[in-house]
Amino acid sequence: MHSFIPFFLLFAVLLSGVPVLFGSGVSSPSSSFSSSFPGISFFKQQLSSASPVSSTLQRPAYAAAPLALNTSQYQFVLDGSIPIKEDFDAVSVDLSYYGLPWNSFLYEEPLPVSWAERLAAMVNAVDAYELPVLLQFSITGNDGHTSCPTANASDIPGTTSPGVSPFTGCDKCFDYDIVRNPVASFIRQGYINYALAVSVAFNATETLALINFGIDANRYLENGCTTDQWVAFSQFTQQVYATLKNYFPDKGLFASFSLESMMQVNSGQQCATGIDWNAKNPPTALVKCAQEGYAALAEIPRDVFAFSAFPALTTASQGGFQSWYLSTPLSFLTAAEKQSMVVASTGFLWTPIVLNYANTTDYSPPLQCNTIYQGTQQASANWFEMLNTQCTNTAAGYRTYVINFKSGRDTLFSQAMTCPCTVPIPALQPYCDVLIGYRTACYNARILPAACEFGIKQYGSMGVRDLFGQPNEPFYTDLQTARQLPLFGV
Image 1 (cartoon, rainbow, N blue to C red):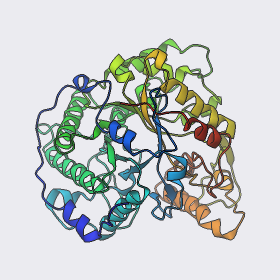
Image 2 (image 1 turned 90 degrees about the horizontal axis):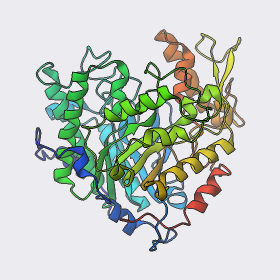
Image 3 (image 1 turned 45 degrees about the horizontal axis):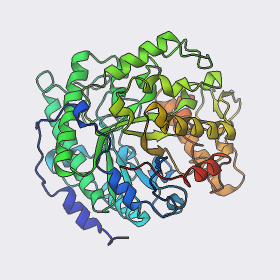
């Protein structure tokens, strides 16, 4: 463990005025791939002796975020109560839930005090784990506005202020071209300043290994953005990459991609309907969609090919899927990309999701409870086995360095995932209150309350442990058994 990082020191680092290489060039994405990449040697050196390194290297490092649900949003658990070091090889940090204080990084206004204090506390919490760190943040909004700049940060820890950006008019596709959109130059510079600052802050832990500077970057394409807009967005990611690579040449840098968005199966995309996920072979339409989705990523710079995958949310209505869910989109990767993969985020719900479709603000009768997903503990374990097998299939040319799970522990208890939300003990009532609060907010915004309820429940039971810390079996045992195998090396 390293020295405690005080708030005032972090504040100084964030506003230190480190020069930004705005507009600098970057090598083409394909040229950055190799059989190894910066950051992995660090993983190999830092992992605990419980995961021995030998001449026959066979598995990824497994990581997770210590997430919890507070009264308004997911947030990083600071007290070490989630046993990340016991269960995993590395720790991940997702900053997208905290928003971006745009005025601070655009105009050098003081950082929101609570935001800065929270970030400093997260750095210290990560430092205490003494594990390799995967740092992740998002260019675009994490509240469904996937083509708009990331949300503005408020002064409340773990929340973002109303609206999806500090600028009005972004209801669909924000244009990052500085000629067509004069505001774009400010957004570009502000985000680059932010990306550099938070990376510097977490680098103080001395265990920062990987930086995902654009979570699910390809989701920008889900809102009908034009080719020209996508080109401008891609060029912007090249600027972010170049700046970070200049300051962190020894880190693995990348923007990650949603596998579902790459297959174009998210809501509103070309292959969102009509796919039989239980078919023996991948439908021709899906193969075509996945090929097109992969081709669109050509100009996004990365040291590795990193992707997120959440099949339970995509295939819920059909109750299952085949191994081609993974093998089809990954088949289009180059040989070098297959040799350098990272699963940036994944998980599989082990409980059902039951939503109240009644257009009311709470769970008062009459209820209209509908089961939209029937999860099981075995299904969760099956997904891990499928993912692990595919990503370590060296015979097919695949090598994955890190698999990162959405959360090390469930964020909701099983009764909260159903309808109505009931509590086994009074201390858990705040979780039901959170769901009611979200339903109320949606009702007031004239949105079907079930939509907000789903937003909270969609990741509620993806942990290797439940909310109370008990192992989610057989997933937990399967993961720990896999950890006894030696690691993929450099």
